[in-house]
Length: 383
Image (cartoon, rainbow, N blue to C red; front, side, top):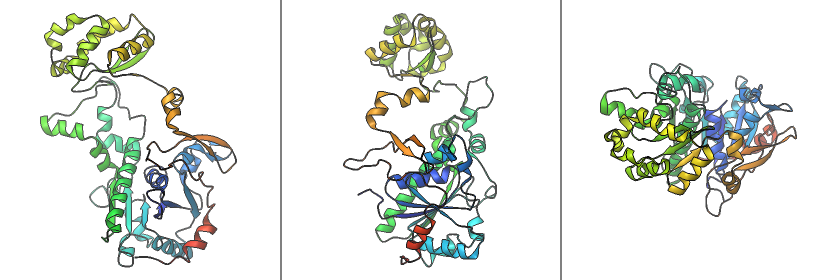
């Protein structure tokens, strides 16, 4: 029995933040019905394309059904309303106002279905001076401040290599949906959830916003370094880079022992966590003189023995082949509608005595239209 078994979600979403949220709910057992326009979710066109099917699309649309509706067609719009009234959750990531104009906004359902959990994902929120503006992950990373603290101090602006604004918003939305579902299950009201990429990006930046609130200064780009801990970043060895994270005095002492520089313990610049952070450029230069004498494997083994947190800087091919990933069973076999067999990264969480492995391969466009509407149109709408 999966935690969200029996919960029906209707997803009017494209690309990433909304579909990612829908996938999280589907992984936990919800029946997620993805409503697509006749041309499909635009992410179906994103490479890599395997025999006509996007593996990017497949990676965030497992465990879902796909139906095709042209919401400008009155008959299809009526079918969409019936589908929503059969559901527990609506998830949409159109620009604010679009669902209202289609006659499918939250207010049009609230009286008839007070227990409905309706989640709207947008760039800036459902109201306010920017609410009508569109946004993508990179534009929100820029506006939210994420890009101002990403990259090397003297480098050009860069975004995080993972679409954190999209994915983080999907996570916030899924958590809030499940929270409101719990209230509804206890006899409470449904709600309209307003999840904005800008707000969620700022919410994830709690350490950076608190630094500004506490000091009045903007946080700065530090590359891989940390504003309050050192040595706590990537370092160059003889044949590549690696990371250590020595965030307290005991770990710092262990670092000096590993590199044979116990004399650094008496240096006032490095006497405390705060002073090491303030002088971390000088500290990095001193340590890299020692690290240049051996390769990455040597230093990782030495820090492992000393109990200092460390990490190899992996490519995705390397980490996906790691024994821990294999042990956890995170990589699953997947078959695309074209018949191509591929792999995907499944749910990363585990629940005792519960199988969260993939139940349904990603759908072909409209593959479930007849099946879903045969069920949905006859299903009694529940409050």
